[in-house]
Length: 155
Image (cartoon, rainbow, N blue to C red):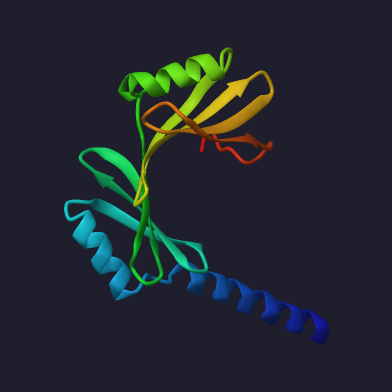
């Protein structure tokens, strides 16, 4: 019985620690950097992306966005989904020629201090991949997505 009580206390402590970690909020520097960059954002929700990076999910101009900031408040990247019709011609041509036969599952425009890029989740049969293309149509990255790494929204 004593072992059961000890185990129960350990489980309760883990649950409380988990809840406390989920309630953690970014520093004032992170919030200030976010508010400066996205002054008209609404419905902001914060989550720790890594030990040193915060991600804000929010709405801006009727669209869903995510933005990442370092723990010090330095903006790292912003992403939002776009429609295929919004993809520049050079990017669309690169997808059509380099990835013929693949279906587009999701498209995001990514902005970072180094520039803009377009991220695609592509599917062909049982094969999924993530492709990143520059606005000029240069393929910057291709990565096979392992089963379970993509949710129902293609993310």
